[in-house]
Length: 312
Image (cartoon, rainbow, N blue to C red; front, side, top):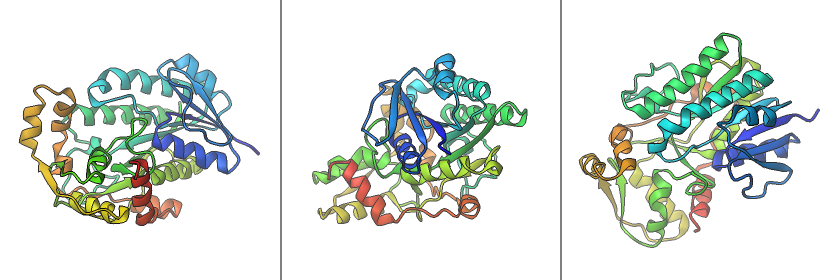
């Protein structure tokens, strides 16, 4: 039986989710503001404002799952754009009875000592972390009240296909084009601390696996990710994989970021979460590995696709 699926967002994770669903024979609609993106065989692209609950409900009519892979924009826009978007998605899921699969990040936990697992309290003090925590809390409350069926998949900094395009820029993709031109790059925080990087393809695989499992709803899952690397190490591996000389990797110190935040709204937000790049930041995804029998994509393939996205 062909299942109907709605993917909200046409960024890297959304495109992977749509491609995987279509490949197995599902009827897939990708909804985004533009209404079109890179062609995916067998996928319908539809333009709509996902913060419009009525339009979203019409698009989700008959869908088995609503996959929320949206990225509403740069950090300074989150406070204005995320709440109406999240509210509309919850309304559409409740009206249609579709499962609600949410793409999340690790910000709600705040600074963490030791591996980051799903059982940690959400104690973020920065407003980005508090906002994302509140969005999940609202969905979880609706799930516990029996109004929707919801879960969230969280990953660390994204790498892989599409990073640097469609709202998919991360810490690596931000500097990779310059590195490929042989330039010295500056990376946020410390470059010598172990840090988990999550492949966007593995985020998509985890979202689909959880959506297919009725017992997986009502909680957070962490996407299986490769062993942590330092920022200096991943840049060296990318240059080696590209057949290019390694470049000098320097640190953009948090004090500099905070000072630049006086004139840059984006860097002002980044300064609030600088702990992500100044201390070990290691993801524990053992629960998802055990539940869904998932393992991270081969690291050499992750590097290759990250380079391809940067034009190498």
